[in-house]
Structure formats: structure tokens, C-alpha cells
Image 1 (cartoon, rainbow, N blue to C red):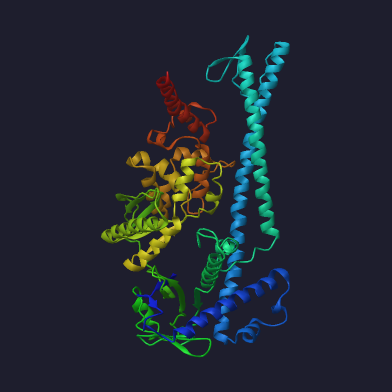
Image 2 (spheres, helix red, strand yellow):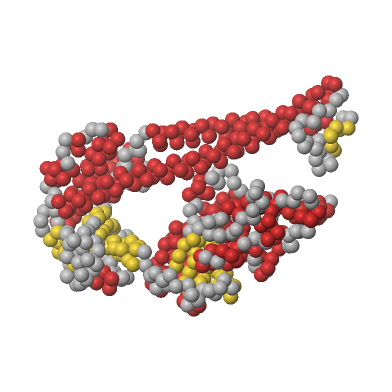
Length: 586
């Protein structure tokens, strides 16, 4: 497995120092490169979405050569940057379509829930009016627990309220629900219109330099640039804005390479000490003492290896200013690193369950026996992006330290939160906040980096139903939390020990097909089996699975099923908890 990584050089290259030769030509090259990139992007946009523009009559190399006098190597780099922007917009469009579709589904469910509640309230109001007129009480809807006694009404929790007072409350609830329904429906329609526009209309053009900064062009006399608004100050503020916007649009350049070049790149050459870059005007800019602080040996090996093993190297250049307003260049190299691969799990593995505030680890031997457990806690609440990255990096480092100590590979869950994050509109506030803290991409990146540094292999598995399997099979048996049980289950799935994930035979026999065949648990069927079990036991809190599942109730019923067990658990355990809470309130 190859991992693409970008490594910055070990120092800044200040323009006012002697670390750069021919800096003027290089700055001019960056300006021409970005002007050509913006121009080519607009031409590609016109060609793709408007069927117009200069590229209908000529190829992009001819267009760039005639206007910017660039050679073929720079043409390829400019085209990569411009077409990459078009491609990123295309992928972003797919992402928006997916997330908005999931959000619309959530809104539709919310509308249906509000409508059902509104219909029930209207039915109650109608029954009260019929009772007041004819003296006959009609059940408003199936399983309604309301009862009327004279001028009083008995609610589902045995509370007695005056009938006219309850009617006024119902009317107020109806008004609130109607307003809520109208608001949610209107919001859903706006979201649906947005999805329709995304699918049918071309994306907006990219504003190179940033929309936010560009929007400040009409307010350059504001507090950001000047306190006084006289003519001279406004002109100065306008000049400052133009300079900042120009630098933003021309601050970076990427020169992709080719493996057919001796140096991995036709425009950049490294002689072991200095990096030479061929500019657009034909001159050469030299960056002295170029060195990578990480993976420098891999970088150098690329120049001495055989042509068949040589890889392309992409050099990136970014110009910035420090606090003293001095300009400097940041150089970086993007290259592919070979991830440490080792499929040997003969001595077991370390498996990890990822949560928003901790990692749950389990050590397993080759037979699937649980040997040890570990919990690594961290706190991401009220932390900045940089702090979160550092905290997660330190936690992942501790995970790999444990792997090295145990001399075992790592098995981790592969999570895609795209749909879940888009579907949390009307979810629990606390749960939504925890999900936003769940930075899986940062965790995955840290795992890849630590795997490269420590030379410890890892593999990702589909975590579907691992928490559910752990809840049923291992929570009560080992007295562990559901997260530690999930970590153990992830390890068993990663090692392919599916026989240890089979549910109790009495539960499995309830999943017989119409032909009376009990399904066999295997790699192909375990998700389907556990999906049916999970659906049947939905609504039962996880802590009740520390108690025994009442299988004896199956012998008392003529036609038992999974729902028989679930209903019995609710009656035995959850009802007792409800009664206890009611007694506390009294």
C-alpha cells in the first residue's frame, strides 16, 4: 500500500537572504504560473459547462504558449492545477448531493413525525367536542390511554385534569405544531431546491484568492485597513487590499514530476545539496542546502535507484510573510511512501475501537482469546483544531507504543461519517456535539504516519454491528464496557474468527427460514444475522445486557421469536427501572 505524503523542507527561504539565487525570476515565474492557471481554469470551465471559450478552437498547450510563452513542462503543471480545480468541484458536487439527500431524508422523517403528532392532537380535540355535545367518548386513535370521567379527563400517567383546561392545552399544542410543521416544511423545500440546483446547474466559478477577501473590495475603508476615512487613507487601504489579494492569488505553485525523469521532475533537479528550479524565462533559481527533516533517505534514494523503481516527485512552493513583514518561501516535496505491510497475525493482534473521548484497545492471541485490555482517554472539548490534532496524535502514538510493547499488528475500524454527520439535524444535542468532535480523518492520518515511523502494520475492517455483537456476546461474560467489547469484536473480525461471533444457539434457532433451516454464521452471513437481531432488540438500553437474557420464556410460548425475548427483557428490567424512578419522584 502506497501513502502520499507532503514533507516541508527543514527551513524557511527568506527572499532578503543569500539562501536563494535568482529569486526575482522565480517570483515572476510564480506570478505567470498563477495567472496562466486562473486563465486556463476559466477556459476549461467555459468549455465544460458553457460550450464556449478559446479551447473550442485550439488545444490548451497552444493557448498557453501563445499567451504566456510557457514550455511543455510548465504547460503540463498549469493544466494539472487548473483541471484539478475543475475535478475538485465535480467531487464536491457529488459530496453535496450525498449529504443534502441524507439531510432531506431526516427532514422528511421529522415532517412525518410532526404530522402524526398533529393528527393525534386534532383527533383528541374532535373527541372532546363530540363528548361535550353528545356525552359519548370516542377513542381518538388506536391505543390512546385517555379516559373521561364527567368534566375531568384522566391522562396516560393517571393525572386528572379538568376537561376544558385540557382542551385549551390541546388547542395551544395544535397551533404550535402547525407553526412547527410549516417551518420545517419550508426549510425542507429550500433544501430540496438547493439539491435541484446542484444537480442541474454548473458550479460557481472559483474565486482565486478567496471569496471572503474578494468581498472586502467594496469595504476597504473599514476597520481592517483604516480607522479614518479621509481620501488619502481610503486610497492607502485600497492599495493594501489590492496587494493582499494579489499575494493570495499568487502565493503557491506546484510542479508535478514524472518518473521518466532522472530527477523525478523535469523542472527541478537535486544534486544532493542544492535544489535547482528552471524558471519560465529559461533561467535557473537555486535553493541552497535543501533538506527534508523526515524521510530524507527515501527522498535521496529516488535519485540513485533503478529507473524502474524511480517515482515522480512533486515540488510545492508557497510564499508567505512573517510578523516582521519579511517574505519567505516554504518548499515541500510530495512523494509516495511504501506503507509497512505485514499480513502475519500468527501471534494475534491489537484491535481498537474509536470513540470521541477515548480509544478502547484489546489484545488477542491467534486463537481469539482475550489477553489484555487498555483504555486511552483524551479530552477534545473546547479545543482548537491544532490542539485536537496534537491530542489525537499523542493518543495514537500511545496506541502504537502498546503495539510495539506487545509486538503485534493493529486492527482498526474503517468509518465513513458522511451520511451520519448529514443526518444529525434533529438528533440529540449532546450526541450531535460528540459526533462533531469525532475527527476520524485526523485519527486515520495519524495511524498511517505512526505505522510508517514505527514499521508496525495495520489493517482496516468494516465495523458494522461490532458494538452489537460485543454487547450480546462479551459485555456480561467478561464484565467489560460496550466499547471494550466492540474492540474485542473488531479484533475477531480482523482475524477472521467468525465462529466466535455466533449468537447463542437458542437465539440463532429463532432465525429459521421458511423451510426450517437455521442459518450458518460465516463471513458472508454474519452481518445479515446480526442486523435481524439488532432490529428486534432495538429500544433496550445497553446496560441491561449485563443481565441474563431470559431464554426460559421461549419454552412458555407456542410461537416464540426474537421479539419475545426483547419484550420479556423490557418487562423484567426496564419496567422495574421505570417504577423505581416513579417512586423516587413521589
